[in-house]
Amino acid sequence: MHKLFEYNWRIREAWFDWCCEVPHEELIKDRVGGVGSILYTLFHIVEVEYSWLRVIRGEEDLVVKYADHQSLDQIRALSNRFHKEINHGLYSLTDLERFKEVHVPWDNSVQTVDDILHHMVAHEIHHSGQLSIWAREIGRQPVVARYLD
Image 1 (cartoon, rainbow, N blue to C red):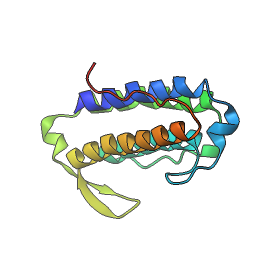
Image 2 (image 1 turned 180 degrees about the horizontal axis):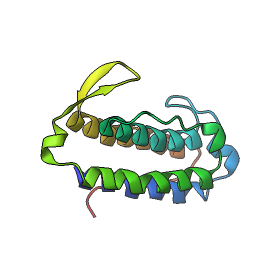
Image 3 (image 1 turned 180 degrees about the vertical axis):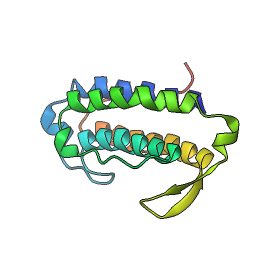
Image 4 (image 1 turned 30 degrees about the vertical axis):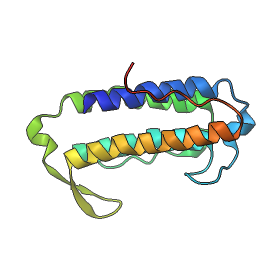
């Protein structure tokens, strides 16, 4: 499981680098499908990953506002800040803890930690695919999202 998270983080960093070459107007333009703009999608990926980690730990969800993180540099800094905590949280999970059930407050469901971890990986891959489509729509090559080197 750790390798899939590391893959997602590597691809996310590549998207951040990719965005540095794209005019800001293109990054904030509302797009068809997904959650809105390229920039908001990157924010959403970061924020959701952190929310799920907090659920796994049994901690209250912290609301992180997009209004406070509307530049690429701010979202990348948020990602880096959360990454340290998420990485530690993932590596400290025991096999027994992965099958523990936890309450998800925003939809009032109960999920296993293992299912949440799988969902977290799939969530980012899904949005990376949307970013790839939008990249092509603006005439740019998307990030190469190869798992194998």
